[in-house]
Image (cartoon, rainbow, N blue to C red; front, side):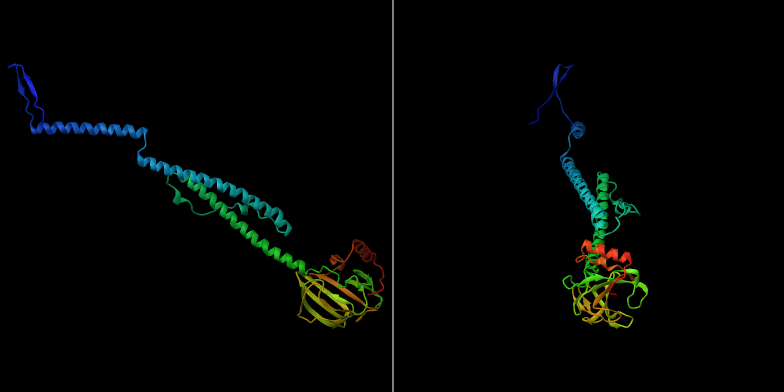
Length: 325
């Protein structure tokens, strides 16, 4: 039950009952409501100035988590940078040196991206600078990884070619040391021919051995000639080893391969003889590089001792008259 209020009447010195109209009540409550609204807004403004709302706290926590994740990602990218730098250095200083390839220029490894702004979609956010920086760093690493992958593809092909080259390059003596009587008539551009009686180039080396001694292919390759040569070589075989290498085997007593046949290093391709312009049983052996004859003793990697090499070089350079052509 509402309280009854009274007011002192000074004229009658009595208390008159206060009667409040509906309009007055509405105005009074309206004023009180307005004041409460103003006070509430004031409290809210003060509170929000010094304290975060639950929504703001939630957003702040998410923002902090995003910043932390970007920070950790940037640290990971720095570690990847260091690892990639080590790989690139090893690639240039070791792998490419061994495989005789030029280092990749820094301008290629560190090349950026041209054209339009690739990061426009990341602009306008609170963390735009962080997102753009990390994305640029990631793109740079991806570009360097792509360049490095191309480098490895190239080096793998070179390594395969190197392995194939090692198998194909003439690298052994065509007659085993156990069957070899002696080496004579070294490589020379001005050698006396004992049958023709004049000086002429001697494009190979003569290896003396009994008739019928096995002759070995000195490297992998394909037989391009297996014929009797009327120009003085007699029965002869020419093997194309690829990579610009060819070997010639002459004065054979018999041929054990056919033209077009594939041979491996160490395969028997025929036997020592004395056919053609020859005074006694021996093998005339030549090595050609890109069509030019070179000294075969430089390719006797396995059988030729240092002393043999020096002696044969002296024979070639001394221009001696040898007993066997």
